[in-house]
Image 1 (spheres, one colour):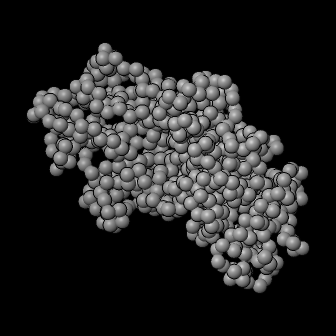
Image 2 (cartoon, one colour; image 1 turned 135 degrees about the horizontal axis):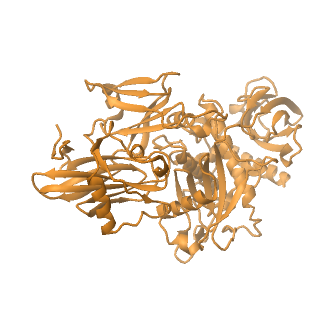
Image 3 (cartoon, one colour; image 1 turned 135 degrees about the vertical axis):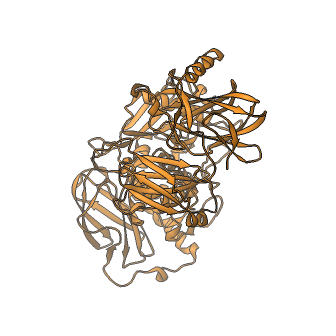
Amino acid sequence: MRTHIVAMIASVVVACATLSGLSAAENAPATGPAIRLVNYRDSEVIRFPVPLIRGVLSDPARTSVQIINTSSARLTREMTGLAYKGRFKAMTELVPGANKLIIRSGRDELPLTLVYKPQTTPYFVRIVYLTDSSGNAEYQTPVENDAQDYVGKLDTAMKIMQTFTGERNDDLGFGRTTFNLELDDNGKVKVHVFKQPEPASFYYGMNDVAWWGRVAGELEKAFPMRYAKNVAIAAYTRLDGATGKVRGHTALGGGALALFGSGNLFTWPSRLEDVQAAFMDTRPIDPKKFFSDSVGRHTFWGAASTTIGATLHEMSHTVGLPHTREPYDIMTRGFDHFNRAFTFVDAPHAGNRKAVEFKDDEVACFAPISVAALVANRWLAMDARPFKDDTEISVQLDEQKTSILVESESALRYVGFDMQGDGVYHIVPPSGSRQMRIGLADLRQRLQSNDFVVRIIDDQGNYRHQGGLLVGPCVQTWQFATITQPWTDKSALVSMSDEMLKRIEASAASAKRVRSASRFVDFASHFPADKRADVAGYAFREITCDQARRVKIMTGSDDALRIWVNGKLVTQVLALRAAQMDSESNVAEFQAGKNSLMVEVSQGDGDWGLYLRLEDVDGRKLRVRESGELVEAR
C-alpha cells in the first residue's frame, strides 16, 4: 500500500510541475545543507502527536521524503511525505516522550528529536459516530468493496484537524496551540458509536436546527458534557438518486455540538500515511449518484478537503468563533482549501482539468481575528489549570460618548467587533490588562457602522457579548415569574397552553420590577442555582401606548426565544446560541393603553439572557420609561 501511495504522489507532482509552467530551477533552494527544516528545531516540545514538518532539500528533483521514528513501534513508524521543487511537507506520529526521528531524502539524512508532551487539560473534543435505531454503521459510498473503516477515517481526520490548528496557529505567531483529543493507550482517537433511539426516517423529517437540537439532547444524556465538545458524524446520510436530495446531512455547530453528515466519508483517508495521497486523489464523483460536497470540484480530493475543513469550521463554532470575512480563514469558505496545508498544488478537478500551484498566502488558516480568540478559549488551554466561571466583564460608553470602556475582573485576552454575525476587527489587549478604552472615532472609521457587537474574552475563558451601544436603548427593567418549565428536548420549544401563559404572566406581573445593569438582561441572576440549566424562564413588562401602533421588536437571546404581545405569539426562535443584539426583528401590534410583553428564554447551559429593544416601523428608536410609557428615544 505504501508503494502505491508514493507512486501516486510522485506522478501527480510531476504532472503539476509540468502544468504550472515553472521550472524546478526557479524554485530551487539556495546552496546549503542537503535537508533543512523551516518550522521545527531539534529537541522542540510539541503538545499534539502528529507534527507537520516542513523544510527544503538541496535536490529539487526529489518528489518524496521519508520520516522514520526510531522511538516508535507503531505502524506509523515510517511515513512518506511530499517533496516539490526543493520543498517538503511530511508528517510523523509521535509517542509520549522524546522521539528520535530520521528524515531521509535519497542518501541524505537529518536526525531530529521532538519531545511529545501530551496535554493535561480536562477539556477535550469527543468524536461520536451516530447510527439510527437499526445500528447500521455503514456510510454511503461508490468505492467497490469499501472497507467501511469509519473508525480509521475519524481517527485520521481528527488528528489532522488538530495538527492543522497547531501548525497554522504557529505560522501566525501564536504558538502551536490546539485542542485536546480523547486518545486511548495506543494513541488512537476514541470513536464513540452512539445508536440513536429513532429510525433514520425520523431524523430525515426534521429541519437542520431541530435535528441538531435532538442530537444535542440525546448526547447530553449519554455523555458527560462539562468538559467536552462533541463532533458528531451521522452514518445515515444518503443521497436520494430519485430526487437528488441529500437526507441526514447538515453542517451545524454551536454549544457543545458540531453535527455533520457522512456523505463524503468515503473520500477521507483511513490512515495518517494516506493523508497527502487523499488530498491529491483525482478520482471523480458522479454528483447524480453520490453526494459531492466539493464546491463543484467533484473529485475525491475536493470532497475530502471541503468536508474535513468544514467539520473543523463547525467544531470551531462550538468554542465561540463566529464567521469572518477573511478569504482563507477556516471560519469562511477557506475550509475548502484545507488540503493546501499538506500539499503544494491543487490536483486537477471537474472545474479545472489542470493542476494549480498555489501561493503560501493562499492556504487555509485561522486568520488572526479567529486565532486570537481561539487561543483564549478554555478548550485550547492544553494544561490543567483552575478556571473561575462568571467573572465580571463590563462594556459601556464613557460619559462623553467618545469611547468604549471595557473592564474585566480578570485580565483581558481578546476584544473583538462583530457585524451581522461576522468578526470584522479585533484587538489583543496588553498582557495582564483589565481595562481598555477604544476611541469611537477610530472605531467608526474602521467599521463604517454604528451597528456592531463587542465580543470580549478574559483569561478565564469567559465570554461576554455586548451589542447596541450606539443603536438605541434596550428594555432593561423586567418582572420575572417564579414559574419555570423544564427544557430537556432541545429539538422543540417547551409546551405552552393559553392557561399556562396566563399563570406565568400573573406570576411575573406580581413580582418586583428589577432593572438590569446592562443592556444584556441576565436571566441566570434571577433564578435559583438548581434552575439555571435545561429550563425555560419568563420575564414580563407592561408597556403603555398613547395610541395603537406597530412596533418592531429587535432581539437576541441565549438560548431559544419566544415573545408574546397581548397573548399573541410574535417571535419564535429555536436555537442554542450566544446572545447578540438584533439577531432577529419582528413587528407586533400594540394597542392604545396597556400592553403585556411576555418573554420566554430557554436555557441549555452556560450564559442565559436577552437583548431586546424597540423601534417604530420607520426605524425611529423607542424606549420604555420606568413607569412603562413607550416614547421616542432621544
